[in-house]
Amino acid sequence: MKQQIEQAQGKLGILMPGLGAVATTMIAGVEAVKKGLSQPIGSLTQTGNIRLGKRTENRLPKIKDFVPLANLNDIVFGGWDVYEDNVYEAAVKAGVLDTHLLKAIQPELEAIVPMKAAFDKNFVKNLDGTHIKEQKSRYNLALAVMEDIRLFKEKNNCSRIVMVWCGSTEIYNEPVDIHESLEKFEQALVDNDLRIAPSMIYAYAALKLGIPFANGAPNLTCDIPALMELAKETKTPIGGKDFKTGQTLMKTILAPGLQARALGVQGWFSTNILGNRDGLVLDDPDNFRTKEVSKLGVLEDILRPDLNPELYGELYHKIRINYYPPRGDNKESWDNIDINGWLGYPMQIKINFLCRDSILAAPIVLDLALFMDLAQRAGMSGIQEWLSFYFKSPQTAPGLRPEHDIFKQLIKLENTLRHMMGEDLITHLGLDYYETPEENA
Ligand SMILES: NC(=O)c1ccc[n+]([C@@H]2O[C@H](COP(=O)([O-])OP(=O)(O)OC[C@H]3O[C@@H](n4cnc5c(N)ncnc54)[C@H](O)[C@@H]3O)[C@@H](O)[C@H]2O)c1
Image (tube, rainbow, N blue to C red):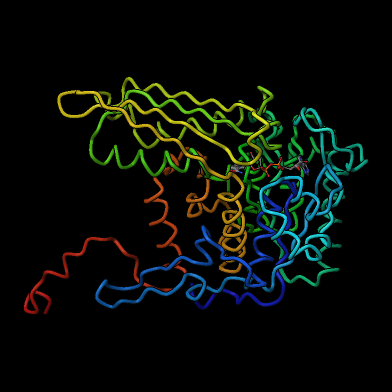
């Protein structure tokens, strides 16, 4: 495979529907890193190492020196939003980064102006933006998005483009017949079927042009048969969904540990206060439902009550998100976990995570964009399960259980990189370190 990977030559355009808190924090971060003002902490592609070969070989290069990723200096950003604020104005309003830092990169951020959004208020009731495309049918909206992409690519002289959905969480939507095949989906676009979500219009436009698409929100988007079919047809990588940050990140770090030690879990109560625009959107029960479904699957899949009823058969998992404006992007989450140990004796764990949502999400957007671009150049297409590491609700082949355990997800990601580069996969068996030279012979 190594010989087949095309080098990252020329400019990479990262296009994001939704230039809100997450997207602007990512863009500003990359610009600040490029100027040497900050460090890309939390980004595996920029700071992570990967072990190669045996432990005795001591080969631990940086991931960015091991696989041919796009250089930060070769990235151009763009996107769409229902509000017309440029990225500087949107970042100031999001209130995530301090103005001192934003001022230092103001010209770069002001130069990024959102394109008009393909939007339908029925999918996000709590937004009132007016920077919206006027095309009436979903098919014409898709054509308009494709035209935006072509113009962006030409104007910025990009050799490649990737798209990451950083838009608001849309209302809960289940797959129906029009999502079942590409043929039905394309007919539904022409018929302007209102069951096609705006996020699907962007995904369709991207995949039609062979542009990798990752979904950072929990809504149903590229995880429908029609778009999986299109991804296959145009040999394009897809992945999703819902960036794994905050409380769910903690869950997928802690739950595998409890399960590994065969400790029982009776209950996991999670509540949050959040005051950014995302919190406002999630204040609508239909939008919250999408997020809730995405968050709920995690524990069941890690703990497997079906296989271990004596440990997890009673598991009660409850999640709440409360919109609380004074906190802005600085979410606070509380988890109460009721566990039991030897002979069933009960114990409790409390987590109080004072996190910053967009600070945790921004490096994920960057990594996903860079890895999706790598996957494309490596000739990998369709669902990129090796990027599950970044998602709350990883997309997998139909019928295949997702892997939620963050440590297994990391092993999968690293082994995929080793596989791409023709290095031995690491099984962590390690018996060979204890074999005598005669046994080895
Ligand atoms: N921050 C996190 O930790 C985190 C974690 C997981 C998932 N997410 C998801 O990422 C997404 C972005 O989060 P955020 O905090 O930046 O939210 P945000 O509200 O600040 O930004 C989202 C932006 O998308 C825009 N938008 C909505 N529909 C659009 C459309 N059809 N086309 C173009 N723009 C559209 C909105 O106007 C808004 O500016 C949300 O769906 C959120 O649930 C965030």
